[in-house]
Image (cartoon, rainbow, N blue to C red; front, side, top):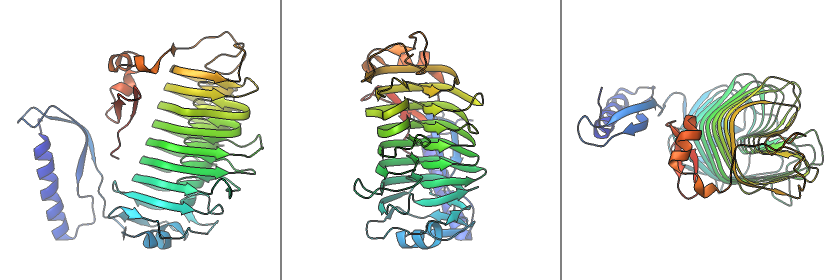
Length: 394
């Protein structure tokens, strides 16, 4: 069926009016993820889309309400945002035991300008079977360089501690976290000890900074450390990451009981990805599990650092299965030997799917070599970086 963009907007507006008049508590707007063609009748085609403005549960319109009802108590309730929320005048939550096992519909709105204390360790503390979707976070900072968090720390949550948590269509921009002692650090979640799914997530211009000298922790753009089944798809990390041990673009440390399935991911270390003592990987800082890992359609670009030569544009540690992994314009820093492969950081011959200059990555290159990203409606080509990233609209 042929549907124009104008018809979609008209249908959404009429549906919203009718449902509002009826006081309905169901979703009320259709957002197309991708439309081809133009506004000429019968020339536009809806490729995919979802109903994603929800009015089920308790409405949240202020940062005070967010803090009181969603972030502070133990709750399994359902909430939805009704507008952008500025938290610049709201003090940080202080609870270190609160567990969110409910649902939060961000509805495409932004929570911004929240400075969380070093004791809080994340917007949420524990997640357990939670569902969080269609949410944008901007300028959310956890700790400071002089007052660092002392445990597992993430911009969205400190720890996923309960099974079947699902995080989808999330964007995190212009944020930072600072960790010390035995704390894993992640751009989305610091540590996961239960099954976790993350899909359609972009973490951009986010700094992950750890000074923990504990070799059993991890720091990463998405999940710092996992000891459980973790499924991640359609993710993009861009930023600066530094930690003494186990620095990964997507996951820092996979423990011996952990498992990772990663599909369609891009890491752009636009400054550097650094492990100042050991183990740095473009996708995974260090893998400790034999088997149980699968990586497909991964791309890395940027400087990578590990003084012990344990660095790879995909991973270091125990062997992982990967398919169609590429790197462009990466460089070693203080890693003089090529006795370790660029892709895996393990002793082997020097081999990699490598493109010398990122500027050579045209749309046609992506369509030929990474078609599962280039032809996916979630992704869009950025001509300034020559990389594909997730679309800004969630």
